[in-house]
Image: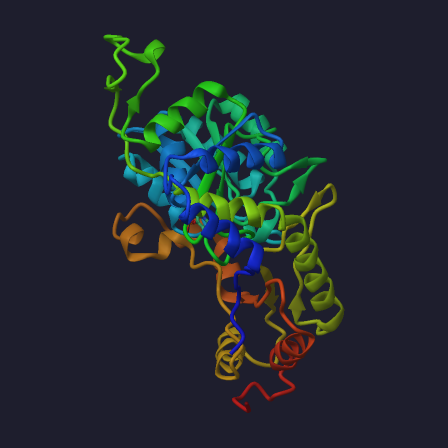
Length: 391
Ligand SMILES: *Cc1c(COP(=O)(O)O)cnc(C)c1O
């Protein structure tokens, strides 16, 4: 069986974790700070705040940007459900923006049209927009940023796929065009801490809010207190926060993995290049990386066009039957029963997302995938196995 993604841990990664397990602090110790410092340095942001998942980071991001009941948050129609759910955790309504057909990212043209339409009709404008860096490539962030200035929304970038990618000479996460950028350290993502995530930001005040919300809404900083006391035991809870902390042993794994990130990114790009050479069917559309950007290739997503000899579903099922664990990233969020039952969304509003949903396949991509595995995948894909089970 060939999985669609897999972590790469070496003995240094494992030793780093074991060292912390033998130390005084399993959590709330110095390694969390070290990981945060290195991550911020790597992406080129002022600060980073690590969390126990990217979902928690998205939730904290929404809270720190002031999302509350009565607000509306917009995200991409094609993504993992976490970005939409984060807004729901804050009691906000969610709406979706259609995608750009070639990159599968939020289309800024659709975004602009939807903003203009909402404004003309006197509807609520979004407080926060969450673009997603699909498959490892940043969305049209500069254009979205320009729109944010006209329509007054904040930008929470979901870059769960895109640690190590670049956009106009800046690393994703530098927050050149976002208020906060979020990363995931789930095992299938670019680097892993088991479960884990992070927010990066250039806004020191936002970073302080994120840190406080990560740990129950509690402060030990006298300058933030309502009734400051210089007693060592004293702290104040200023707002309702959570326990979304990352442990020190996870942070140690993150630090060790971060040192290997550039190798991971380059290997994923090599694999993408090999797929691009090996796949030569005019009914397959290969992924496109826009000029001025690099992708971290978290995913390698192809589109099976209508001229294909078999349907997408037939190809998908035959590949799975042959042990190639292809996947579909993602089902349009508005199609999930939880969102569909709200009765707010019609698929007619999302022609590009619907088209994508009927054509996309994620091929396996991860550091360490072998040439033999790539051969099997492409052979199965191109139907040289007759699109039936043979292995
Ligand atoms: C993986 C992922 C998340 C959630 O990450 P977790 O760390 O598992 O919470 C959010 N958004 C996108 C786009 C993802 O791919």
